[in-house]
Image 1 (tube, one colour):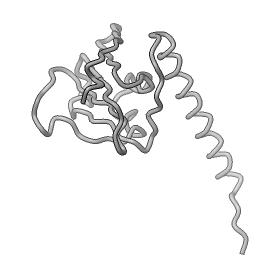
Image 2 (cartoon, rainbow, N blue to C red):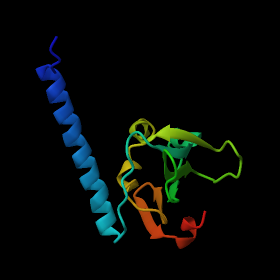
Image 3 (cartoon, rainbow, N blue to C red):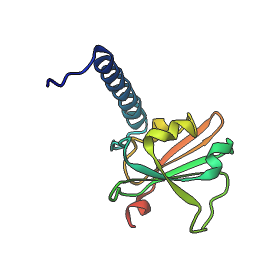
Length: 133
């Protein structure tokens, strides 16, 4: 028996590849804009995210520690930060777009980088202390 891919499956793979390349290019452009190092955040890896990001609360904050295991090192929250042990929930990068459409562009920033988004206001900066985990 022969295994083969249908034309539909081949086209679907090509479209996904083009979208992934476009996402990577956008993330690299953000890194270039802020003179930041680039580190991929693969779709199958996870971020830590607070549930209130879904509620469109501002500001949205993100910080990146060095990646470990299947984690990208990203921790993202909206509004006030909390020290509660269950504040952050694991979420695969590929599902982040269902939570917010403004975060993905920053996920190429390397460890030590932070961002803050509040409507039209965007701030991105480097925080070396994030590397000491």
